[in-house]
Structures are given as C-alpha cells and as structure tokens.
Image 1: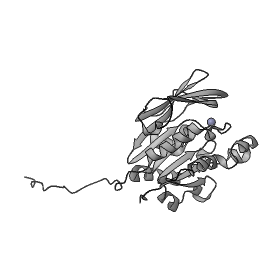
Image 2: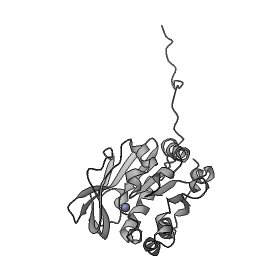
Image 3: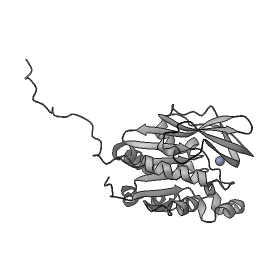
Image 4: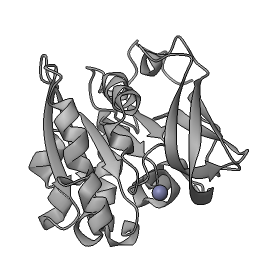
Length: 250
Ligand code: ZN
C-alpha cells in the first residue's frame, strides 16, 4: 500500500438500509450514518474522506478504492450476510498484509463478517433497546484514542450492549461502558492483527442521534490517527535466505 505524505485517506462504509426505509431514522440521518460521520471528518484538514455503501457495485469497495484507503470505517446492522465473501477477503488481506486500519462501529462488532473473521469468535453480545443512559469511562488515559476525552462521557439515550461479549481479550482496552440498567461492556477495544490495527467502538444505534455526539465523533477521529498504517514494507512469509553466511552443513 502506497502511503501518501500528509493526508490520511479514510473510507466510511455503511450498509445504508435503515436510513432509507425507516422515516424516523431518515430524520436523524438524512444523508445516512456514513454521511453524518463523513461530514464531521471532512472538517479535519489532515483527512481525505470518501464514502461507500453496500448497494453500490462491489459495495463501493473496488480495488481502486481499497488501494487508496488507509483507514476503513465499518457500520452495519441488518445485512451483514449480503456482504460478498470475496470483498471481505480483500479487506482482510489489506489489513493483515498491508496495515490498512479498520474502525468497527456498534452492531458491526456483533455480527459483521470482517470483524468476526478477524476475531475468530462469535462476537455475540447481550442487548436491550430501552433508550437508557450510557456512561463511557476512559480506562487507558494515556492512549491516543482517549486524547481530549474527559474521565468519562455520557450518551443520554442508547441501546444497551452487555457482557459477556464474545471477543478475544483486546490488546488494549480504552473504554468501559456502564448502562442505567446495570450492565457493563468493553466499549473501546484495540486489536493488532498482522500489520493492521483494528478499533471496535460500541456507541451508535441507528434510532438515536449518536453520530452527532461530539465525544463520539472525537473518539472516531482519534481512532483514525491511531489506526493509520505504519510506513513499512508489505509483510512477507515463507522460506528466506540467511542474512549472514552460515557454516556449511557437516
Ligand atoms: Zn443497535
């Protein structure tokens, strides 16, 4: 992957079904969830923002788009199974071998093909949509994803996700959520896979204006800077020649 000097190239991917079929959701996200996230990210001069959606050819993720994406943001809810396996495979390889960053939002962390493939577990959660309050606590204050975030922030109305969340133990945990109904949840999880960095961020049910929340948007932008690829060669594996001269075999 060729890494551009300067701008980080971000593709915001969205399933984009609920916003077109449910008028209550259209009201909250008239340009789609991807549109709301992209609108904020476009205010940051270090970023170059594109969007892509499920119903475009190749889900909007042809080779040219993927080859020019440093960080991919993924939101999905009802149509995980409609994502073509060959596209998932391309994304998986881009992450592992070339270090493309992946930010997985809300329900995409519960069932999306790409996240489950990277985790190797069911990624199942407990859930309840009662419009309750969520308080997200920063548990790694020195982590770059927690930059300029207070000790905690609150979302007034959300869908609850509760433990046990069936993921492997995260390599770094940045946020833990508390919910009004009593549950807790690992809400900001970092994983390293091959050359790639993956951040799972829980907030974001489609019937609440969560992607208009300044703290949520701040965390997403912080995660982009963290997840961008390191400038280094593509990973290679297999048989190699020695770097030093070896004694000949007896
Ligand atoms: Zn949800």
